[in-house]
Structure formats: structure tokens, C-alpha cells
Amino acid sequence: MTITKHSKIKEFVNKKNIDKILNINDSFKKLGAWTIEKYASSGVNVKDFSEIGKIAVNIFLKHIEKLGFEVEYDNQKEEKVGGAEKINEDNLKIVPLDVRPIIQSGSDPFGEIMQAIKFLKEDETLKIINIFVPIPLINVLKGKGFKSWTNSISDKEHHTFFTKVDLSVNSNLEKKEATEGSFDDKLASFGDKVKEIEVRHLEMPEPMVTILEELEVLPDTHVLLVNHKKVPQFLLPELKTRNYQWMYKDIEPGYLLFIVFK
Image 1: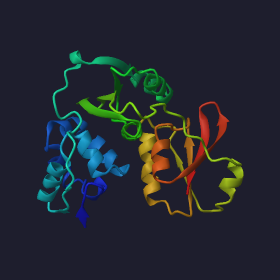
Image 2: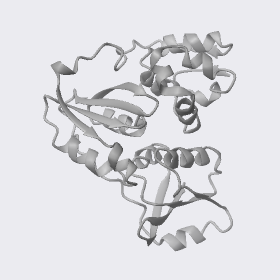
Image 3: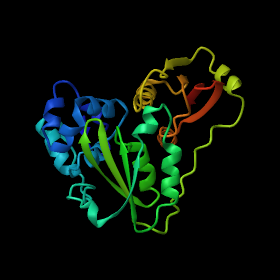
């Protein structure tokens, strides 16, 4: 197997290699083994993981090659790695948004983040303080003309910055709409080809990671039925990227059924 920038890091992240990956640089050390293992299980690729670790893709691939893997280096000219340089916040107009209290209360901060992005001025930089690096949000905003970088303070505190670099792109974020139709009819159409999981007891980002883990092994002819507390807004852009559809059904306050299928 040849590792490229598009390969999933789960191909080489294991108990044997995790300490060597942690020791590549301080950014990976701050992430910690638990976080890296969760990124691996959720399907993060080499390119995105390199950006998280503030290291150029080819330099990261060189480290993977030293672990005994065959690699294919990226021949394209690499952009400067977000966050690799020292960022002086005093030189930026920072708009801080600490979403940790929102997450700790059991709510989803997606709405607050959308509002912050909507009203962010051209000369301002949004600073999101979170308990994890929001990879799906980074990918969505990259397509909206934003560049980003992350400073990992510890394995439980990550500061991700967003600044608009392409003013020609509409930066408004819209909530992804569910597939239309009857939830019950769609679920019933899969017969016994249903994989059911429970994530209501998990704290963010565990529900999202667990769902992505299950989708990695879910046959295309099956549906994933998730017992959830809320619609996982952070997950929806990633589901769209992977060509999944989704629907949900409210059961009671704080409890809904969420299905994912192709």
C-alpha cells in the first residue's frame, strides 16, 4: 500500500506507531494519543492531518516513510502550512468565540458559529476556542474563501482561527437540509439492513466520531440508525462530501432518531 496525501491516517496510526507520530513535533504532542486515534477512526486524511499538526505534507510523509511505509510525495507546490508560523494575535482584529460552555451544556454551537461568520468583517479574524479541532468546519469554510490555522493549547483546548482571503466567495453558511419524505417509510425500506447505535451518552466530538467510524464499515445497501440528542450540524457537511443522505425524527425533547444512508 502506498501512502499519499489523500490516504486515511488510519492506515498507519496504531499502537506501534502512535508514540513516533506524537514525537514528530510539539503540535502532535499537544493533540495527544487519544485525539489522534479519534481522528484516525473518523477518516481524516494525510493532508488534513498535516495541517492540524502544522507540518508540510511532504515532510509528514517523510516521517511516515521512516515508519516503513511506501509513500508518494506531492509534486504540487505546497501552500504555507496554516499556523506553522508564529501568529501574533496583537496584529489581528480578533473576534473570540468560546464554544466550550455551549458544548458542556449539551447544545450544539453550530448556530453561534454561523452567526459569527455571517457578521465577521473583512478585516477581522474569528477565533474559535473548542475542545477539539473542527475539521468539518475547516473544510466547509475553506470552500467559502477562508484560510485557517489552529493552535493546540492542550489535548482538550484548541484555538482555531478563520480569516477571509477570497472576498468573491459568498461566506454565508446555511444549514444542510434533510432528505425529504417520510422518515418511517425510508427506514422501513431497508428492512433488516439496519445498524443501530446509541450516542446520547457521549460528549462532543464523540458522537460525530462514532458515526463516522460506523459509516466506514457500513455497506452501501444498509442504513445507520442513530439514537441522538440533536441533529449533528458539524457532521452534515462531511456527510454531504461522502455522498450520504440523512433524515431525522423527533421523539421527545433531547432525543431524536437520525438515519444516514446512500
